[in-house]
Length: 342
Image (cartoon, rainbow, N blue to C red; front, side, top):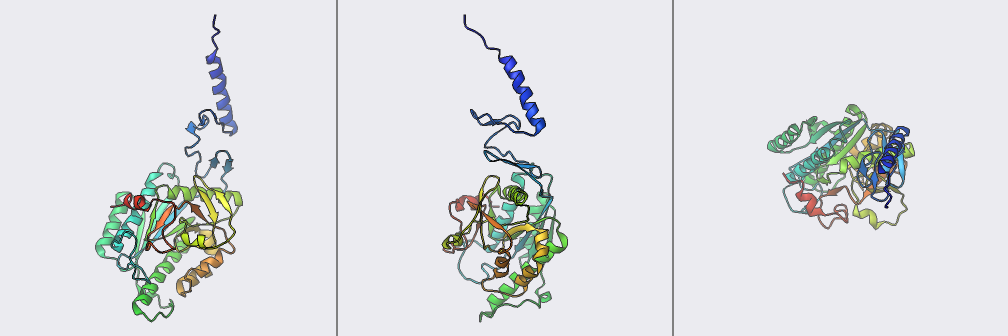
């Protein structure tokens, strides 16, 4: 006679064991099917919880000691100027306003994509605008109202920025465009210092983000900052020009992406209010006196602070297709562009 196994007894002990693991704070995984019974998720799902822990199979758990409380997103917009110092056309060859709209769409889509996971974090969007059409600003305003996102729109008056000094380019139009750009940067930094409490994400209006970008940046910030016991900078773009240099780097594991140490980035980056305060003089210097390259004061900061960027990229910088400062390798540019259309 065939012997019948007592599966009910086994299942009873299994349930008790899983409950005990939960109480003790241990996670277990069934390697036969990659199921994590303590979390009721598969191993390839998001196993982490913002502000609590970060779990990477098979690296284990990182207890979060540096949790994110709020994120202020400061977007510099100007729908009337194509490229500040160039006459080249951007990838997809659309009106500048289209890049601005899709940048904002991509930020909104990213906040919506992980809305449940981000519910305990306070968000606010600041729009620092120069010379956009009234109807363009109204369109931006309606997008944010529709999604019930707290926001503030600041319109620049260049007459208030007499302290800004640009380099002589023998071209009045380019010099005026650069002054407007620097005024936007200056205002963004002052908003960060005076109105923000925790993390700040500075965004230029030609960066189209993947839907997972905001959550990946915040969860990675918590993880790496907790592991290293320090505040950091995060650049969301895998810039192609950085592969032209033979430099030593360090590799980190974020939530779902690999990240590497970089010594340079452009003006789209995320950091903390405390680092803004520590490096205030250098940041202010960059927004009041033009350097060549422009981001030199920021790169000087990276000699003291850690900046990391993702592999592959979390955002696409929409410059000319031939620019080494733009299109990141190994991502589907057309798909990302289309997924954030109006």
